[in-house]
Image 1 (cartoon, helix red, strand yellow):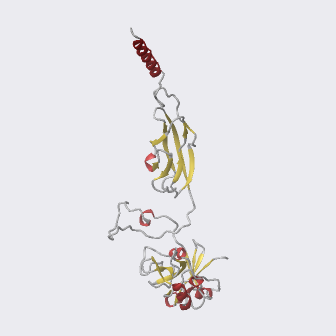
Image 2 (cartoon, helix red, strand yellow):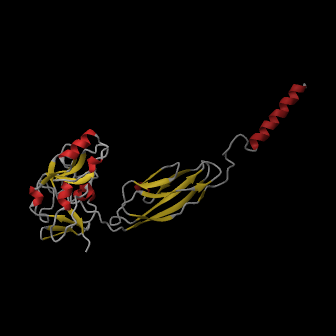
Image 3 (tube, helix red, strand yellow):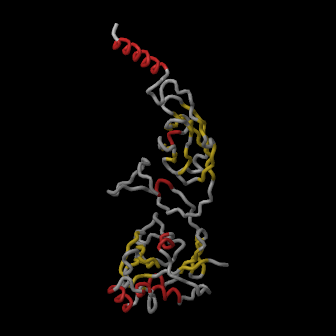
Length: 307
């Protein structure tokens, strides 16, 4: 027998020994380390929020995650990061407790953890829009729940108003609204002609925000109504808050508001990047637009209830 023959025999023995010891595999069949969960198994979350929990487990190898059983179908899971969110926002009044089984795997071994989620009841101060039907882009009513809008969810607090002596108290938001004949007859520009011309020439000019003169904001600042003098022009959000999407022409609760035209009403909010325009609410349908500040449109003033 030659020297080369003995070398081959020795090499074969080395390879066999190396294979028997599990060499060449970083996570082979001899991996007996089971992932260990370090994330909590019980959590409470507020209703109306999607975020739930992030699963975490330790292991010497890369861990991936899955969930099963219980209410697992109600969640989306990132199998790499372990982040779990609701598919749709939870509602305490509909379902206030969820469970599932979490699994952490390193490719060979698995660990399981039973997870429970309590949904907390949150006082809802956002008003319902009062939209009760859902429609697709062609104006066809959708009744199978496939279109998840306000008409489907019916979320929020039912609006509550009190109308006394030409003013309307919004009992949900704590705002008081002007409600006299001026609401349907008075129209004002957002900027006077001089300031608008300045703004048109230079949109960085302070004139774009100077509401002096015969303007909507100045009208509100000068208003005395119901014994109050601290009236102001409402924000876009405040003005949208009195839209009643169950009505149109005008889109408002006309049993509470005695005066509203199906017209454009100014908000105090300037449109970003185009300071010569401001946001306006169209009370025929409850739509929102931006228009140039030199136009004359209707005004409904607002104030905070302080007493």
